Image (cartoon, rainbow, N blue to C red; front, top):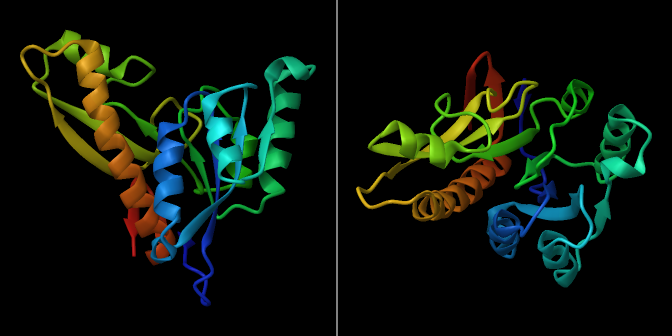
Length: 210
Protein backbone atom coordinates (compact mmCIF):
# COMPACT_ATOMS: atom_id res chain seq x y z
CA UNK A 1 0.00 0.00 0.00
CA UNK A 2 1.47 3.33 -1.08
CA UNK A 3 0.30 6.83 -0.17
CA UNK A 4 1.54 9.77 -2.20
CA UNK A 5 1.27 13.53 -1.59
CA UNK A 6 -1.38 15.46 -3.49
CA UNK A 7 -0.19 16.80 -6.83
CA UNK A 8 -1.27 20.36 -6.00
CA UNK A 9 0.53 20.30 -2.61
CA UNK A 10 -2.71 20.81 -0.70
CA UNK A 11 -1.94 20.31 3.01
CA UNK A 12 -2.63 16.78 4.20
CA UNK A 13 -5.65 16.45 6.47
CA UNK A 14 -4.90 15.19 9.99
CA UNK A 15 -7.51 13.98 12.46
CA UNK A 16 -5.99 13.66 15.92
CA UNK A 17 -7.56 11.55 18.70
CA UNK A 18 -6.72 12.37 22.32
CA UNK A 19 -7.71 11.28 25.81
CA UNK A 20 -5.77 13.71 27.97
CA UNK A 21 -3.63 16.82 27.99
CA UNK A 22 -2.75 16.77 24.30
CA UNK A 23 0.95 17.68 24.40
CA UNK A 24 1.60 15.65 21.24
CA UNK A 25 -1.38 17.37 19.64
CA UNK A 26 0.09 20.76 20.56
CA UNK A 27 3.39 19.80 18.94
CA UNK A 28 1.52 18.98 15.73
CA UNK A 29 -0.52 22.19 15.90
CA UNK A 30 2.65 24.23 16.29
CA UNK A 31 4.26 22.44 13.34
CA UNK A 32 1.19 22.92 11.15
CA UNK A 33 1.41 26.69 11.67
CA UNK A 34 4.26 26.60 9.13
CA UNK A 35 2.83 26.17 5.60
CA UNK A 36 5.99 24.33 4.59
CA UNK A 37 5.13 21.52 7.02
CA UNK A 38 2.53 20.19 4.58
CA UNK A 39 -0.36 19.31 6.89
CA UNK A 40 -3.20 20.77 8.89
CA UNK A 41 -5.21 19.39 11.78
CA UNK A 42 -8.82 19.40 10.55
CA UNK A 43 -10.42 17.87 13.66
CA UNK A 44 -9.65 16.60 17.14
CA UNK A 45 -11.68 13.82 18.72
CA UNK A 46 -11.73 12.30 22.18
CA UNK A 47 -13.32 9.51 24.20
CA UNK A 48 -13.70 11.93 27.13
CA UNK A 49 -15.25 15.31 27.75
CA UNK A 50 -13.41 18.18 29.44
CA UNK A 51 -9.85 17.16 28.61
CA UNK A 52 -7.13 19.69 27.88
CA UNK A 53 -6.52 18.20 24.44
CA UNK A 54 -9.99 19.33 23.34
CA UNK A 55 -9.42 22.76 24.87
CA UNK A 56 -6.18 23.13 22.90
CA UNK A 57 -8.08 22.40 19.69
CA UNK A 58 -10.91 24.77 20.54
CA UNK A 59 -8.46 27.59 21.28
CA UNK A 60 -6.95 26.98 17.85
CA UNK A 61 -10.38 27.11 16.19
CA UNK A 62 -10.33 23.44 15.21
CA UNK A 63 -13.56 21.37 15.20
CA UNK A 64 -13.83 18.81 17.99
CA UNK A 65 -16.01 15.80 18.76
CA UNK A 66 -16.41 13.41 21.68
CA UNK A 67 -17.48 9.77 21.51
CA UNK A 68 -17.67 8.25 24.98
CA UNK A 69 -18.05 4.49 25.24
CA UNK A 70 -20.74 4.96 27.91
CA UNK A 71 -22.91 6.85 25.43
CA UNK A 72 -23.36 3.72 23.30
CA UNK A 73 -25.04 0.37 23.76
CA UNK A 74 -21.91 -1.61 22.94
CA UNK A 75 -18.23 -1.25 22.19
CA UNK A 76 -18.98 -2.03 18.53
CA UNK A 77 -21.56 0.77 18.41
CA UNK A 78 -19.03 3.17 19.92
CA UNK A 79 -16.38 2.16 17.42
CA UNK A 80 -18.81 2.67 14.54
CA UNK A 81 -19.73 6.14 15.82
CA UNK A 82 -16.05 7.03 16.18
CA UNK A 83 -15.29 5.68 12.71
CA UNK A 84 -18.08 7.73 11.14
CA UNK A 85 -17.03 10.89 12.98
CA UNK A 86 -13.41 10.54 11.82
CA UNK A 87 -14.42 9.65 8.25
CA UNK A 88 -16.56 12.78 8.05
CA UNK A 89 -13.39 14.86 8.08
CA UNK A 90 -11.81 12.89 5.20
CA UNK A 91 -8.42 12.41 6.85
CA UNK A 92 -5.23 11.56 5.01
CA UNK A 93 -3.78 10.45 8.34
CA UNK A 94 -5.31 9.63 11.73
CA UNK A 95 -2.96 10.28 14.65
CA UNK A 96 -3.63 8.62 18.00
CA UNK A 97 -1.99 11.11 20.38
CA UNK A 98 -2.45 9.72 23.85
CA UNK A 99 -5.76 8.10 22.84
CA UNK A 100 -6.43 5.48 25.50
CA UNK A 101 -8.87 3.24 23.65
CA UNK A 102 -8.21 0.40 21.23
CA UNK A 103 -9.92 0.79 17.86
CA UNK A 104 -11.39 -2.14 15.94
CA UNK A 105 -10.15 -3.98 12.87
CA UNK A 106 -13.02 -2.35 10.98
CA UNK A 107 -11.71 1.07 11.98
CA UNK A 108 -8.23 0.13 10.78
CA UNK A 109 -9.60 -1.24 7.51
CA UNK A 110 -11.50 1.99 6.87
CA UNK A 111 -8.29 4.00 7.26
CA UNK A 112 -5.90 1.34 6.00
CA UNK A 113 -2.25 2.12 6.84
CA UNK A 114 -3.33 5.66 7.76
CA UNK A 115 -3.61 5.28 11.55
CA UNK A 116 -0.42 5.95 13.52
CA UNK A 117 0.42 5.90 17.20
CA UNK A 118 3.40 6.38 19.50
CA UNK A 119 4.73 4.03 22.16
CA UNK A 120 7.14 5.05 24.97
CA UNK A 121 9.62 2.22 24.37
CA UNK A 122 11.66 0.78 21.54
CA UNK A 123 9.26 -1.75 20.03
CA UNK A 124 9.00 -4.69 20.14
CA UNK A 125 10.32 -4.32 23.70
CA UNK A 126 7.99 -3.45 26.59
CA UNK A 127 4.55 -3.25 24.91
CA UNK A 128 1.54 -1.89 26.78
CA UNK A 129 0.97 1.14 28.95
CA UNK A 130 3.94 0.85 31.33
CA UNK A 131 6.89 0.96 28.91
CA UNK A 132 9.12 3.35 30.91
CA UNK A 133 8.52 1.49 34.18
CA UNK A 134 9.16 -1.86 32.52
CA UNK A 135 12.38 -0.59 30.93
CA UNK A 136 13.61 0.76 34.25
CA UNK A 137 12.71 -2.44 36.09
CA UNK A 138 14.50 -4.59 33.50
CA UNK A 139 17.64 -2.53 33.84
CA UNK A 140 18.16 -1.58 30.20
CA UNK A 141 20.68 1.15 29.47
CA UNK A 142 18.81 2.53 26.45
CA UNK A 143 15.09 2.80 25.82
CA UNK A 144 13.14 5.32 23.77
CA UNK A 145 9.99 5.73 21.72
CA UNK A 146 8.42 4.29 18.59
CA UNK A 147 6.02 5.62 15.96
CA UNK A 148 4.12 2.83 14.25
CA UNK A 149 1.24 2.02 11.93
CA UNK A 150 -1.57 0.73 14.14
CA UNK A 151 -2.64 -2.88 13.65
CA UNK A 152 -5.03 -5.06 15.71
CA UNK A 153 -2.30 -5.98 18.20
CA UNK A 154 -0.92 -4.01 21.14
CA UNK A 155 1.98 -1.87 19.90
CA UNK A 156 2.78 -4.46 17.23
CA UNK A 157 2.29 -2.48 14.00
CA UNK A 158 4.91 -1.65 11.37
CA UNK A 159 7.57 0.70 12.71
CA UNK A 160 7.79 4.14 11.07
CA UNK A 161 10.47 5.69 13.28
CA UNK A 162 12.25 5.22 16.59
CA UNK A 163 14.31 7.46 18.86
CA UNK A 164 16.70 6.26 21.55
CA UNK A 165 16.76 7.69 25.06
CA UNK A 166 19.55 6.86 27.52
CA UNK A 167 18.53 5.48 30.91
CA UNK A 168 20.42 7.31 33.64
CA UNK A 169 21.55 5.68 36.89
CA UNK A 170 19.41 8.00 39.01
CA UNK A 171 16.31 7.87 36.80
CA UNK A 172 12.86 7.40 38.26
CA UNK A 173 9.93 6.31 36.14
CA UNK A 174 8.81 9.93 36.04
CA UNK A 175 12.14 11.47 34.97
CA UNK A 176 12.71 8.78 32.35
CA UNK A 177 9.19 9.14 30.97
CA UNK A 178 9.53 12.91 30.70
CA UNK A 179 12.67 12.58 28.56
CA UNK A 180 10.95 9.95 26.43
CA UNK A 181 8.02 12.34 25.90
CA UNK A 182 10.37 15.05 24.61
CA UNK A 183 11.87 12.61 22.11
CA UNK A 184 8.40 11.33 21.24
CA UNK A 185 7.06 14.77 20.32
CA UNK A 186 10.04 15.51 18.08
CA UNK A 187 9.77 12.10 16.41
CA UNK A 188 6.04 12.49 15.79
CA UNK A 189 6.38 15.94 14.24
CA UNK A 190 9.35 14.99 12.09
CA UNK A 191 7.91 11.71 10.84
CA UNK A 192 4.37 12.91 10.15
CA UNK A 193 5.81 15.86 8.24
CA UNK A 194 7.96 13.57 6.11
CA UNK A 195 5.06 11.20 5.48
CA UNK A 196 2.69 13.88 4.23
CA UNK A 197 5.33 15.69 2.17
CA UNK A 198 7.03 12.67 0.64
CA UNK A 199 4.41 9.91 0.79
CA UNK A 200 4.82 6.50 2.39
CA UNK A 201 4.48 2.83 1.56
CA UNK A 202 3.78 -0.16 3.80
CA UNK A 203 5.43 -3.30 2.46
CA UNK A 204 5.13 -6.26 4.80
CA UNK A 205 6.79 -5.23 8.06
CA UNK A 206 8.52 -2.22 6.52
CA UNK A 207 7.39 1.38 6.18
CA UNK A 208 9.20 3.36 3.51
CA UNK A 209 8.91 7.15 3.36
CA UNK A 210 9.53 8.88 0.06
